[in-house]
Structures are given as structure tokens and as C-alpha cells.
Image 1 (cartoon, rainbow, N blue to C red):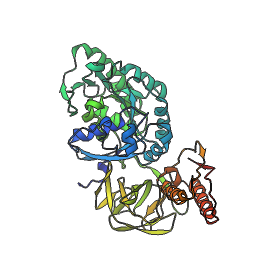
Image 2: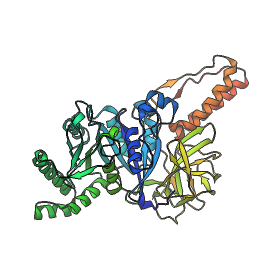
Image 3: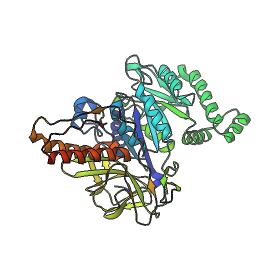
Image 4: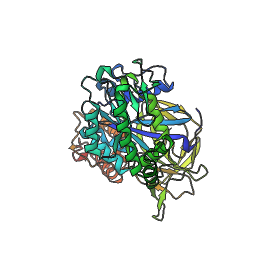
Length: 467
């Protein structure tokens, strides 16, 4: 794999309500960039971030998954997130390590309930966002209606930078209001737009929409506002600079067109990820506190003592426990050592890799801002801080939503006791909210009670365990 600097990285959370095309968008981008040699489809069970048997059967995401690609010298790491409320802890954990977000909105339904909920999660973590009106190739798709629902839900900062060319089955591309060019696509899934002039029948609408865009961007910056009053307009370079700055400050949410199932718009989406959304250098995060309680921000200096947050854990039948983490400071080296703040244990970092769906591609190091995976750590779980000896950084754990239900588990027979005990231990590893201090204490208390009751030959109940 190519090596990247922190400034070359884009960690992009792909969020939105269920069935808005998140997995398809990621697969289409990987195909357009040449990372994959075919267009993965959810209905075919071969989307890159769709690897779990339950996900393939049900055709929606259950857990967060990662995939990366190279685009114009930058590495874009897409974080696919579930869109249904029952799996929202996975989405919350994924957004903790994102530096930007693509918020998908269905062109027919508009903003749905979980779109609003994940928008709140994005806002909690101060993550800049681009709104993607997807599936414009569907019958009765309505871009204007979808934008209206975005303005109602997210505010007037949701402003189109694209206008669709055609609608439904006639949708073939869009007018880019920044470039003032038309991008049209073939329905071959390749996602490479043909650049041309704006259709004559759209010229007036495009000019009007661009005037609204320019005014909104100028309003977000005093310097640009002065130029706007003096010139009556902003040139392309000024507009791009203004959009980028306004997005980073979360004062502007560009709204774009797409039909991910046919790859329409994937090249421009990746351009936006690279040119508009921030790198970890542009998006300094308050990651926690030092041992004296002083606030600490991410340190992207590659020579700084490293510190990383484990935001996800999976239990693999072959590789064992795999921890997914983001390096917030310094550089993490393969075959190095890390200190676990929670357990006071020294961990050997073997099998350092970069996740690509279900595959893990081995790497030699991970720089600040990079997301990676480490297998076979002895006693490291979700929300743990790993750091170099000498570092004082303690990264705040993910603030997961409160449990919604409680339930009970009872074995049907005495022979099921050991199976349930093993399953509970695996759940402790994999359930994201088990990494929070309160839930960890609650689950540990239950497991102790379970072990005690087993020694008395009683069949215990897990009544009171929440999820």
C-alpha cells in the first residue's frame, strides 16, 4: 500500500436513514477509482462493506464497516454505517473517528427519522457534512422536494451546488454550479462524467441558483462578503475557497445530486471528499485529557508520542479479537508496543492492517488521522486508549446512546450454560456500548453473578442486562 501523510487522509462517515444507498455509494466509488474491478451491489450480496451473512440476507447494514480508495493522491476511507435505529450505537462509534460526513437523503422520501438522528450525532462531534440527494434515477424522484426537507431539518445552510439534468429514468447527470458546467453519465456504472455546456433550457435556472450559492458562501466569511459587495460576484477560486472554509466551520452544507446504483456522480463525490471535506490536519479534535485533567487536542506531528482510540471490536472465528482504532497523535508502528490506559497493560501490536471490507491489508505504520486494525491484543476493548509510554493523553470514550430495552436470557438445558457464557463473553467484545465505563461495570457484574450461580448448579437469568 502507498504511504500517506496526515494531510492526504480523508475519513468520511457515510450516514443516513436505512435504504438510502450508503453501501452502494461506497461500492460505486471504489469501482470508479479502480480499487475494485466490478461494481458491487447489495442485491447481489457482493458490496465491499457488506460481508456479514445477516447483512447479505437482509440487504442492510448491521455494523459499521470500512473501505478505502486512492483518489487524486489522497486516501479516502469510507465508513459505512447502519441506518436503522436498533444499530445506532455502531453509527455513533463510527462518527467518533470521522473527519467529515456524507449525509444521504433519498430523492423520493426526503429526510427521514434516522437521518435527523445521525445529523444530531454529526453535530455532537462537530463533523462537517455534505448532503447527497441519492437515487435520483427512481420513478417520482424529486430533487426540489428533497432539498426542501433538508432545509426544514438542517437549516438554510443546506444549499444545492448541483442541479439535476432530467428526472427519474431520464436522469443523466447534473449542472455543477461551482464550475458552471454540465456533467453527464452513461448508465454503465463507471462513474466517469462527460463535461459539457449547460443545456440551454437550464441556463436561467443555473444562473439563479449560482447567485444564491455565491451569496450564501459570501455571507459565511467577512472577507468574501467584502469582495462580493465590491465585485457583485465571486470567481471560481474564491468560491471554492469560501465553500471549503464554510464547510469546515459547519456554516454551509453543500447539497449534491447522485444515482449511486448507476455510478452517476461518483467521480464528483470523491472530488468533493478530497477538495472540500477536511483532513485530520484541518479538523483538530478535542480528544480527551492528560493525566492532570488538562484538555488535549490531537497532535498530527508524526514524531509526537502516539495515542489511539479503539472505536470498534469484532470477534473473528479465525483471527480472534480484532480491534479497530484511529490514531489521533503521532505514528503507530507495526510490531511496536502500546500502553492500555484502562488496564495498565502493555500490548504487543502485531498484525497491523488497513481494513478493506472484510479483508485486512497489512501495513507497516499508521500515521495520525489514519484508521487501522490490530488483531490478537490480549485485553483491549472498545473505547480503550492505547498510547506510547511517556504520553499523557487519555482519549474520551465514545458517548453511546442510553439503552432502550432490558431483556432476560435463560438456558433451556444445563448443557447450554457454557454456550451462553461463551456467547456473553463474545458480546462483551463486540457490542460497542460495552466499552463505556458504566456498561462495562454492569456487564462485568452480571458475568460474575453468572459464574457464581453456575458454581451453585443453578440456571441463572440475565434479567436486567440492557442493550
